[in-house]
Length: 197
Image 1 (tube, one colour):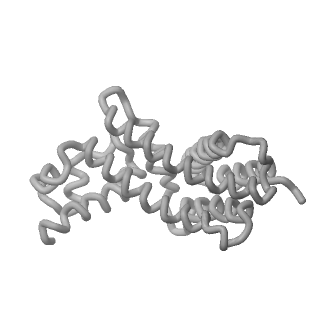
Image 2 (cartoon, one colour):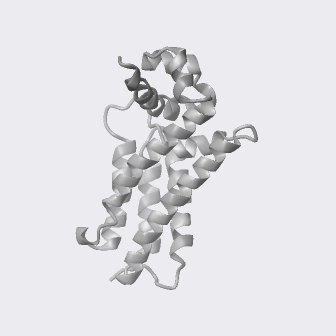
């Protein structure tokens, strides 16, 4: 493997390991061995495990941002239907066939593990959640403009409510090893926020 590929190999490995074993449970030696790179390469690109986790979190969010962006295109149907399709897409990704366990959300997992010693990681995860919430607020506002969600509700607050509920449902899905918590939360959410015809 060329040296230039080491950083990408490390990030890909982090995307695989951190959702499964967590920040505290994933050692640097394990990361380097799984990535097939020498220790010097790790420290060449990342000054610390925390800096590495920040980069992995950013990459994870970038992929999810692109996924969510496809549901913000108003040409893709009603906003309410796009919100439902987005949540179904999250479900299908998390409970994909052939997985030995449901990984949950990397950002949610990191949020549960940050400490006073990992303030930089906490800041990064907070920033990424804020960006995610802002994207969801756009979708909520589109649904409000179309008369599918009560226009009197604050779109940012409702987006925060959706994101908090989604993270809880993902955590429960990971805990139970069953996709039902996420499916049921989605049903309840859509029934409670989307206006019936």
